[in-house]
Figure 1 (cartoon, rainbow, N blue to C red):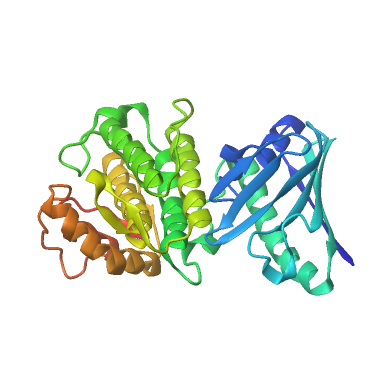
Figure 2: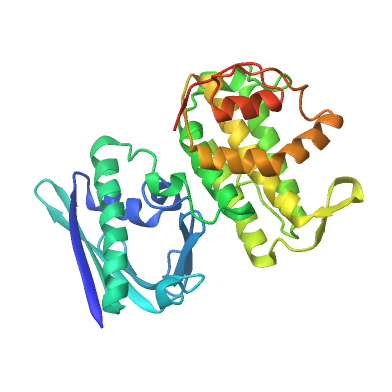
Length: 331
């Protein structure tokens, strides 16, 4: 078997470095779209590293501020690496200019080691950037996932929404959004309600954490909803609002519509830019059009408005959904 080792020096304390590697809110800033971590020996963890690629296993050892040892593998057994099949050790050593973080991945074949070396190098570079500048920036690996389906699209659009939520300020709570009926605060409450409702369709009880940042609350709830659909699958029908059944694929697609359009809404409200690939927008537009039309008949969307010919794909989708105000989009 083969072992991969890589070291990074972070200009932060050992406690901060440990938090960056173990706390879901910090992990989402450099390594994961969603993250769940039960930080105790025997606890489990689940990281959606990029849309559709989910690492999971158990916590084998943990010494806060010193080291953590995880059983590591992939939910779908990618590259022949089943959950918990290898060992990932991260150690934290104080040095003059911060903390030396050493990642060691053991129990790999040569082919697995090559593939994981590329991944760990990519993400450790993002970790260094985050620790140094405070912002790792959008992860290009999450921008245009392969095999886009209902759930990878939900994860990809959640990744688009998260940095916008982090950039909101207290002043944005009472500002009008492009959703005519909602201020920033009201739009957040609407999003919480949507996550609870869509999760219920999959048979999951989604709990609003009530505390924490808006990004943390939305990401935690969204992660639970998507995990519920991954466990259930998107086959067959689910019980929709008012007792009316609808295809599970439709219920899951509602997530990407909500995340993408509301990323734009919050961005327009707060003067931010949305970073999204045309491929992700095209997926949402293609599979969400009928859902938007049906919801429009119930008053959930405004009438379609004309978009300029030169408008971006996201602005065209927003115009189809009744949004009148433009926002810049960087692809």
